[in-house]
Length: 178
Image (tube, rainbow, N blue to C red):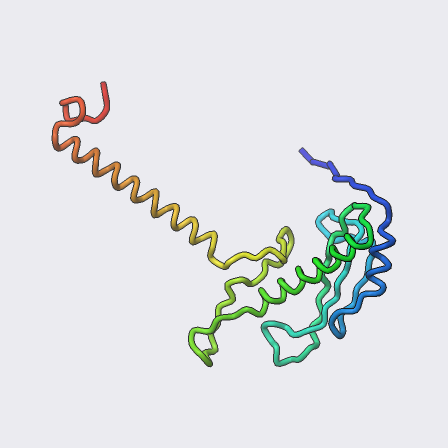
């Protein structure tokens, strides 16, 4: 079945936000626009586009030449100026968090070439690039759950084996009733 449902939301155009975006100054080379945009994957609407200028975390030697567009979905809300100002500031903090996740690297030892980036952001369709995830967390959790399950199964098997060797619960060498 082809699902053609669409989410719909509506709110007055955020003139106060548009004014704040027009007045915003942050880092050198960063630009801010408010536009209706097709963000892909069937998602479209009013979007704050934060264009950053900075270093490529994998090639910082190339200098501040790396531009990235961050698409921030504008909520359908009738906020006052103070609330829009706070929302705008929060979007900058999300971008800064993203950049911190990009650049946070731990080397095997001081001066080592090899480094791990445990908080590298999740890019690509369907991912929230501003959500802090620890690399390996899902595998670690699955491994922990598997360890618990294996220990439980081992205890269960050991108990059944012991019961069978001692005549079992019902006296016929079986732990199950007939």
